[in-house]
Length: 307
Image (cartoon, rainbow, N blue to C red; front, side, top):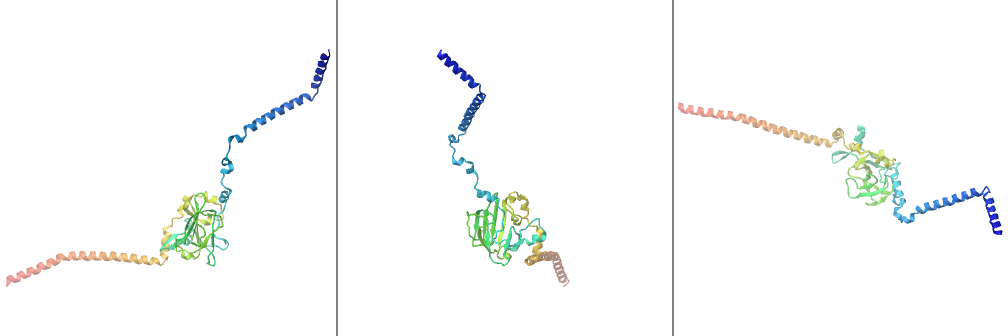
């Protein structure tokens, strides 16, 4: 009897417990928490990267270029001199689309011929030497310190086929393969045989895929502006109009030598013509000479017969 009473009392307690309002919501919340915990644990176990044995070289950051390369692409072209405020452009770039007077001013007279200037010649007002600096960061591609005509050459390679060139320099401080930053001193300004009239200067060129472009159009502009440039049109700028060159030649004293040469050629042609004329005259006279000889012989025969 006691056991039955105990069981009935326990059953009544359970019934009273489940009749409470908070029991079933608590059970639902606890079940949901258990299920959510299991799902999260399963996902974290599935995304565990340790089981794939990743190496440091596979990380995304390792494959990106160094930050310095990004900075290079954001650089603006600068004048290749330390003191830009005092710099003077002595000889401008020959622009095919420019005015006639500007084109004539951009011609350099060397070896009795006028040639278009493929860069800009920069000097200082006092005519003294000055520091030549890198217009952009890059790698020194070539150094030629034995070129007296151009006055020594430094070439620096940049991205996307862009090269900057520095001519007429001395006391060179870099060598091929060196990494230089924008503004680093490369050499001192010097002189060249190609453009002696410029005096102490630096000849600065910017080339895209081997074609020279006007440096003044890109100074203080980003290198990306030149990357987008189509060099097909720029190739025409290197073609010097013959009319301008001929006009410059006539103004030069050396033209008198060419005139003298042409006069001599004409004279030789006239001499040959006169010789041919005299020869033809002699040929015409030769039959007459034979006829006169025959007449003299006939007269002699008549005289002998009369005697």
